[in-house]
Image (cartoon, rainbow, N blue to C red):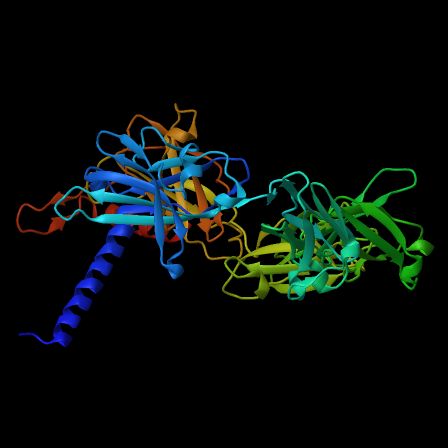
Length: 594
């Protein structure tokens, strides 16, 4: 036999498990959206959502009111019982607690657990419940509760103030609009939550039948709230919070730049355009204007000229010299609906500019005075910037080098001579810039110069006669002399072109490259005349063509030998003649130019 202690423990565990299961079923099976407030005279709609698994397994649904709270021993009084799946509804007309609900309550059509109480009154404020009974073997009862509060005053948040903007020294009005049962006693109170909810002086508010308006001027940080409107009747209290967004003046503009432009006006020949970037902080409100102040050097800001512009730039015409014609100090303030922000740092604006680029840069190679050098010359800039050009800066570097490593020379003239900076480099890039009192101007176009040049043309192109010991295919020997001027560099190649005299266009000519001053036209046509020309090349390129010459194959350009009747040696036909021929051939070979 079990002890009373064990029986009590078993009963407790069963009760605890049932409570846990019931809570789980209640949360998973039936749920009301939220508690609600309904104005006097309106309809209260109660909607419970059911789990899909539960919706097909319900025996009946009960809707009622909690007439005694749980802390006093809960009492549930049903208003109606709806049996499913027939949908038949049974009303509780015997309980005095629910008699007032019966004629005002109805079941929402095509819904399992939705009900409506019409024309609610203040005494309808209570807790309501919905219970569903499952049809399975457990016959589980699942109940959910919802709180209904009937009010006789309601703050209309749609027409009341929500978020208001203000700034230091600005007056604002906060509106708290309500609807209320006529002739109901009401009271409005305003609290500043920025000061821990202290009550605002009632003299700053104005109450009407339909609401209350609070008028304040925001100076201190605590004046920016937020504020809470409290509307009360003997039975209802409503609250509404209004937040204030604080605006500030914009910060100062920055990143100034300016440019100068020449114009053709009678009283204005130079215009300076001053630009700036908008403030980093606009204060919460868009910048509407900029206040531009400018003054000559030495004048006080209190006597500065001012202009109001709605762009982030201003154009200033050059004033007379005694009014800042040499330059001005300029500062800018940004303005929004709150006010004017701090001044920017003053920037100096001059009506003079650096010169434009020098024009028509040209060069000339000089190799007739010893070491080769380049004569440079150029024309004045189109615009000197308003101040006479004082010097010119010439920069030059060999191709491939960076400009930061360029050689630099300065001159007051519009010409200068330059020499090589490296004996291994012959080709350079050159540029020139003009300098005035403002600074260095734009650089000119880059000019390519060389301290050497292509060779002059080869000389004395001739057909060369060469004797051979045996008969050879038709060919023509060409020879020429070196150019008088190699351009300052070693000649590396010769280019020879030849074509039939019948061809007019050199584009159809045959060509070849050789390193010596001679060439053989092989497989020549015995009956054809040829035109020949030659060009010399160094590292600067090919020089001009030589004068064209006409050449033709000649048949008698070999010496015949006769064999002895015995032995392998050759016997000359005429020893004296043969000796003379070889002597002449040797002399001609040495005398011909190479």
